[in-house]
Length: 404
Image (cartoon, rainbow, N blue to C red):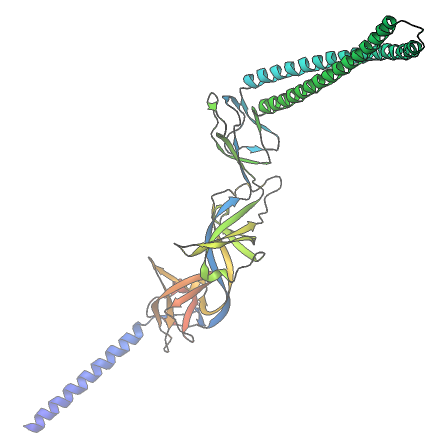
């Protein structure tokens, strides 16, 4: 009886073993082989590390033109986006009050000049009168001296001598009066000259005030904002037009304190501008603000941009406020990189086909980092020495046997 049971058990085991062998054979036959697939070995490489800092494009020179006088805006000759040249008329303000003031000051200047001519005539007349008085005084003095000698000789009477003496004294008094008159006229001339200088200064001031009614562009550039409208009342200090120099721009970036020690004025920097289809353009560090923001622990670094525009154009796309990134050199790193064509996308996930020792492809999810040219950094999910599918991933499926 025991022998019969043992026999049945042996037969059962033989049947099971045969069935399993057939099942394994069937599975092996189901593994699909894929030919012509390029396989590569994962290896690390050393690359120049890049520190990215986001920033905003700014014009190096921006001018806000304001009114200097009170008056109604009569004409506005530009709109936002217009290119302007140095000296181009932008806004006209009512200048009638300034014109009236200028006419008034010029009338005052003419009146003062007429007064100066009259005073100079009076000075000449006074100087002539002084000459005549001096001549008469000299004659009276000579006569006085002779009569004094004659009086001592008793050749003339006392009365005759007194008459000559009186004429001599009167001549001296006349000369003194002429001197005083001349001095008075010169003093008046000085006052008139001062009035003329004041009038001339008032004329210049009125001309400047009248000139403030015509607002012109101080530079070549582009109009970025316009507050002036026809009919509004302009007041001193009121902004009317904003212009920026569209030939020179820089990128203002915020850099972490930990990176500030690696950045120097004059260092070359690559800049990526979204508005230029992510074009990489050369730049140079022009200014470093030494004060960091205590909230973000970042400091401002300004980078001059060297943008090559088309012939006849000046930065046709680059504008203040555009978003950009500065790529600062930050040393070297050793990392694993792959070409983008080796990556498999599954929604928001990325993976690669890893080839095992039996040349079977297995999908493995990975995490990527920065891009370095035509390569992408692999942060996690792969190790050096592993084999992966480099080209032909569209022909490979999970479990395929890969043949190069």
